[in-house]
Structures are given as structure tokens and as C-alpha cells.
Length: 110
Length: 146
Image (cartoon, rainbow over all chains, first blue to last red; front, side):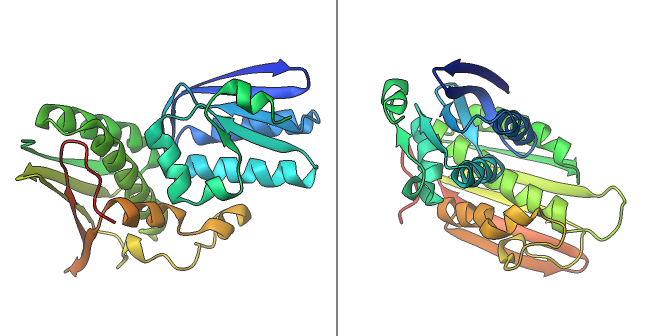
């Protein structure tokens, strides 16, 4: 798994390529919480290059979402492949996490 | 029509997930299983394997977890066998004591996903072994009916 990080205005954008599973999800957690420590509280996760996610990945995203909420920030998820989006829906995460089709739509949410 | 059989064993370590994924992918491609199904099987087996690894043993020893997969007449049958404590990975009601505090809010998330993708899951304790048998209908691009 690869995580590319960039900043646009004040928004931290993480692009994940590969698989987010029990072995790799801690890397995403580290990167996100490093950014939170540096007082970033607006984030987008770009899932275009992600071809697999398990509950371990979902847990990291939930943890991040809670932490950002506490600091009055927000997170938007974008560009998910169908199978990945379905996992979020089965878990009910689409109820409290904004998920957009495209990066542009995600950027517009800030 | 998808067809084939494979059996392999894994150590009870999360690092074995990579091997598990490779075995599933190799078998599934050879057997002609549709991509969506491969995705779902990877997810289900990761969740179950992780639960067995995290909660199924009280000692520090290495243990083998045996997995077999077979495909015939549009049904895939997966069997997972381990020699841990009597433990049905589908039965997690309470989060384990040494899970992170955060995890307690969504204990059972993995099993919720498993139960969505696999409609037939049977657990059996045979002697000193836990045996889990899953059956999944695989079609061209069909998910299991809800």
C-alpha cells in the first residue's frame, strides 16, 4: 500500500493506492494522526487507487472521523470503486461520512 | 462454470494475511471466479482469520490454521479449521479485553460484514478443533440474495 499526501489550501488530501487491511491500516492511521497533531482538521481521502478494504480500514477511518469531529474539523471520502463503496454502505458508514464520486465534489464540501 | 479445489495452512499470525490473500487470488483466478466474488471472499476470510488469530488462543505458541476452498456447481465451499480454544468467530458479542478502546464501539463490525456476504455459515466443535464451514453462491456477477 502507498499513501500519497498533499495539501490544497488548508485541506490535507491522502491518496491511498493498494489495499487497506489489518496489516496496512496502521500506516494510514499514523499519517492521519500525524497531520492532526500538526493541527490539520480538514481532510479528504482519495480512494481512486484503493482496490480493497476490510474492517481494519474502516476502523481507522472511524477513529479519524471522531478525532476530527472533536476538533470541529471534517473528513470527506471520494472516488471509491464500487466494491469498496459497498463495504462502507454495509457497515452503515455512509450515514455519517460524506462520500463523493469525484475529488472536485469533495473539495467543494469545504 | 467456476471449478477447483485448494487446501493450505497458515500460522496464527496477522502477517500471514498476505499469504492468505495470494492463495485466494491465485485459486480464484484459476477457478474462474468473478472479481466481485474474489473481493468478498478475501474480505470474509481476512475477518475470520484475524478473529481466530486475535481471540482463539490463550498461549504464545505457533498454531496452524487450515483453510480449504472448493468450487462446484456455482457454489463455493470454504472450510477453516483451527485447534484453539472453543471459539466460534461468528459469535463475538463482547469486544476482547485487549482491543483498543476505540474498537469497542464497533466490535463485531468484521462479523457483520461476513454475515452480509456469506448467507450460510456453520460452526462446529469437533474434538479439539474449531471448524467453520461457509457456502457462497457464485454466479457471473451476482451477489447473494438478501
